[in-house]
Length: 223
Image 1 (cartoon, rainbow, N blue to C red):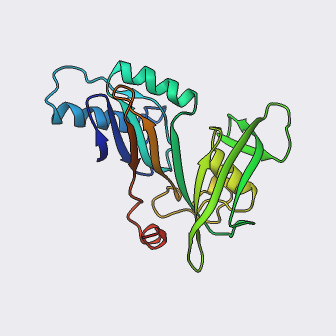
Image 2 (image 1 turned 90 degrees about the horizontal axis):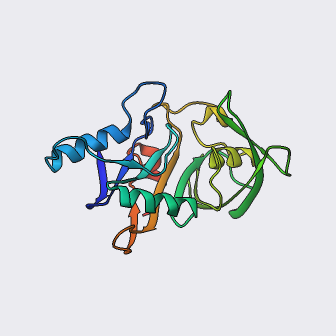
């Protein structure tokens, strides 16, 4: 497990694609259980270890995940996420060049619970929610483009759905139009950075997650 930051109240880890943040119907061991086991061993904690899940990443996505180690931190961080006081920056690899080098995407998204997908529309439709993100191209190769993405809203599969809508599905994301899967079954979307006010000390915390170790990520990552 790749721990990026930890203190008495919070812990930040770099999630691998394929890991689930919290337990679900698959019964697979979630990242939260691995973090609990790490804390219990590292600090020789007797009994049950407290760990609060304050946000999630989709299973095929990699990158930074923040957990609360105390109930005080959990309640305060949950409120920060609710009010969008936490800033998260994502990197995505796409195979098609976006229409502009940088821009803002505004769509209205609906969610299909049965297929666990979202659909983007250019105008408001019944049951839709507005989704807004900023993107810019920060690197490119002969075949791929690396985008930096910042969210203004937090909708289900928002980055995946909106990039697909403009003809730029994320590499490996079969659900949203990628032509082929990635070898590890994940998608090339990485939660690169998280910035937040510490829930107890109120210091500014800024954590960056190293990109996955495969050659394409390493080649595209700006030096």
